[in-house]
Length: 276
Ligand code: OGA
Ligand code: MN
Image (cartoon, rainbow, N blue to C red; front, side):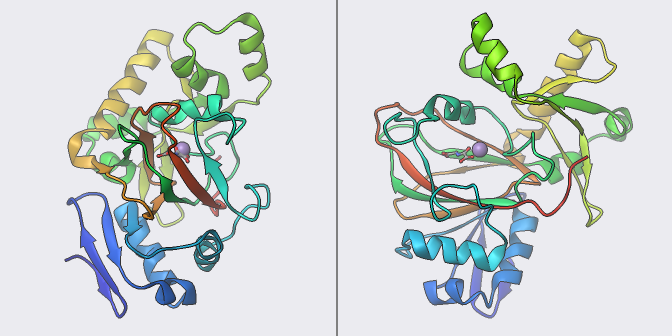
């Protein structure tokens, strides 16, 4: 048993990342434990609640106790994650979520956190993996901390699309290049003073570094951050409500069939820390 507060039992699932929080729906809806839940989330990277039979409205209400929901995020705060084009028109784009990433890397304020509730699961695949980018930074050798301390990376939507469609046409490339790119430090120094690594599928190149060296460094750091000791793999059960700290983790979903029927209901919490 890990951290425990009055109405929460926290069961850690591995030393560095991932906890199940056991509590009841009334406690979650009341917001009485919202501060504790946010603190646990920041420490553990990923938390989930199981067996609570939560509705969409309750999911949104729980999210509101924890932060602010951006106004453009789906109808009434619920956005449907599915690879079926009939359910989500951006299904093709969502295939990018099968590669390590954090959400909102191109936005001035990356999302604080994401809540995902399992509605329908795939018979095969569809587990979601998370890695703790605070822990991965902390454990880096001093020489690597010095090497990356002042490096910046250009992130682009175009780069992440090569994972999904390696041979994009000129028109496709031109389309993705319309999305503005963004430069981010490799090391995010948070307002708390803690530091995490910023990598992922949108990470294109390190500014001022020869391309081969840049690609090799980004791959080496991703390999490091996704070693087993930093990773938690969630085996979903219907109804699970899971939440990740999007500022201190990366995630990816393991491959699943497009026609599997897998459906998740997502609610986002708006970022509170600028990333410049
Ligand atoms: C997301 C995402 C993973 C999943 O919603 O941002 O990456 O398991 N989802 O569907
Ligand atoms: Mn994602």
